[in-house]
Image 1 (cartoon, rainbow, N blue to C red):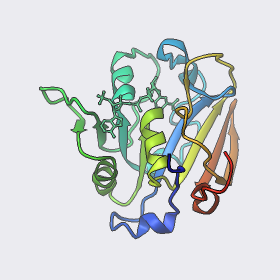
Image 2 (image 1 turned 90 degrees about the horizontal axis):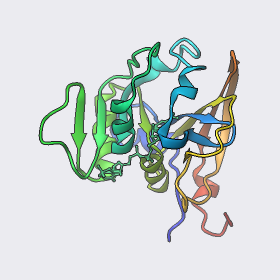
Image 3 (image 1 turned 90 degrees about the vertical axis):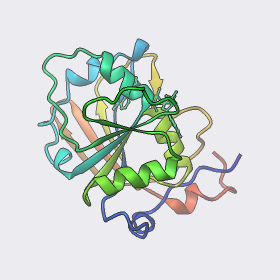
Length: 202
Ligand SMILES: NC(=O)c1ccc[n+]([C@@H]2O[C@H](COP(=O)([O-])OP(=O)(O)OC[C@H]3O[C@@H](n4cnc5c(N)ncnc54)[C@H](OP(=O)(O)O)[C@@H]3O)[C@@H](O)[C@H]2O)c1
């Protein structure tokens, strides 16, 4: 199995898709889960809304979402959750629905083409990648510039982990950490040097 790789911002800006970054954006429990048992997400919205870190949303121009995340989002009935105005939403799936869905573009192309398509729609702003499986594939393909984590002050014990098993080691370079209420924002650049080096043990 080839080692996972991460791109640098310089690599992505050379990809002819505008200056926006590809950002894996996550709310995560202190014990490393991005969803609780049965894909529970309510623990996030008890702490986080669009005003918690108001600079993040305006920097986002589009979202690329895994089908799993899209399906959970459709099932969720969450009161008091702000609409997330992150621009056009693209859902990557092997099985697009027969009927179109309002506000969503389903993509069934390869991963790199999907990222390029969504980046092009982001109008020079950042592209957010949502979904554990999808994000792990993007890390492995070297398509991620930045990781943004909202650490929620809760232990969940079980659920969907930040990364899928087998992803391996990804080295990150911290560049921002802030607190707002109970939530800690951590931001990292992905580092190509160590991440892409197969001689470094996971
Ligand atoms: N805490 C947070 O901030 C946060 C953020 C996002 C998601 N989540 C949670 O994470 C969970 C979902 O994550 P997940 O890892 O299970 O699923 P996911 O990454 O959202 O979606 C995986 C699915 O996307 C499709 N897919 C992925 N890669 C593809 C490719 N290369 N080509 C075509 N289709 C592809 C496949 O669906 P098909 O079978 O349709 O092909 C695959 O089963 C949910 O509970 C969600 O609420 C949490």
